Length: 115
Length: 113
Image (cartoon, rainbow over all chains, first blue to last red; front, top):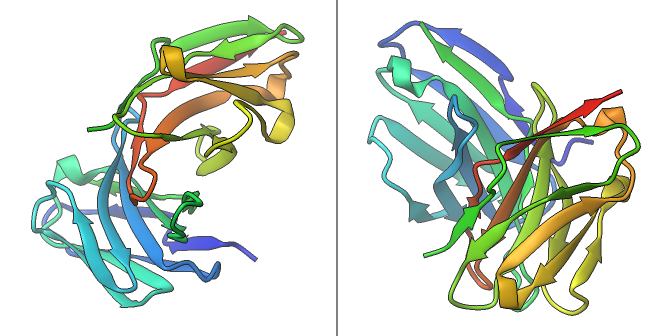
């Protein structure tokens, strides 16, 4: 079974559309993330949720809205898509255990292309 | 704030040769250090991690990395590279109790036969 799964894997859409990427983890982790990998392969965190509560919100346009219905799911909704939103979006999860580190496990990525 | 530098954007090695990928980090406290690999069109796979203890850590696929606090480095090594190792490698640093990984810009490994 895939530990961190995200759908869709590939998404091509037009500018101005609204789209969502879904993510689910079956690892029992309490923390989930969205990372963005741009065209230069640079990976940067966007959001992090711990037990459904937003704890990290980097400088991201408010067109991006994460939603965590439960601690096993973290979806990413993007409004009014722009060309610059084209990227690979990675969902990830970890278990925050004090003093034991928190290995972050990544999904396989969702390749978003805005045309 | 944390930061990671991978000085080499591309590295080409011959199959069977040894490999070392460099990673330098900046972090004010005890870092958690990771190496991930990304094959073309694929997601990120964890190769190895350092949290504490032995500074030489073993990972999957025959990789190892050594944490050197005095040099703020966490270089990745493999004694004999296989063609299937061609991929992009990312070093990352995380805080001890934090939830955020900061990644380096990646090093693309090419393997020539």
